[in-house]
Image 1 (cartoon, helix red, strand yellow):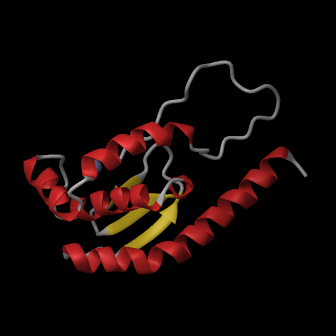
Image 2 (image 1 turned 60 degrees about the vertical axis):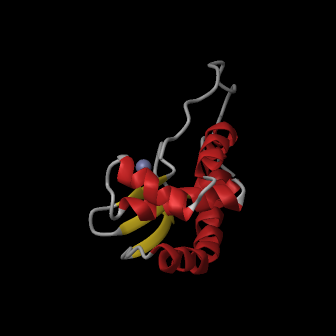
Image 3 (image 1 turned 90 degrees about the horizontal axis):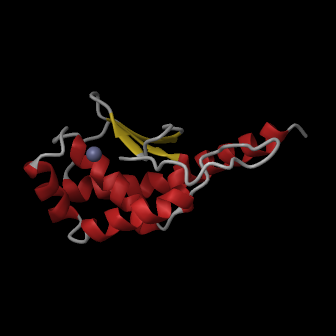
Length: 138
Ligand SMILES: [Zn+2]
């Protein structure tokens, strides 16, 4: 099996499993905080954990699902709030705080644990000698 194939299969598995897991959870959060996403999807977002598109499409990175559900919720709710508050202004953080009063702890934990998550890289020869890879943001 060529080196990239195993990684591809694992990523596909993450996308499928995470999508199934996220569907009911996503819509329950949507109701709770009265957000109106057009869709909630799982895919590869490169260096970001989540995104909220102008047309209401919310997406979470498949790699996020290696982390505890409380951190998935943080990114999910963060992106849902972005649908109404596109920028990280006072109104954004106030609304996020109402939805997740412990969001600061979750955010810090995501920054910490997120550095150890596998983002789909395949090392064919030697592992890189560079120090810690940069962490995706939200
Ligand atoms: Zn944000």
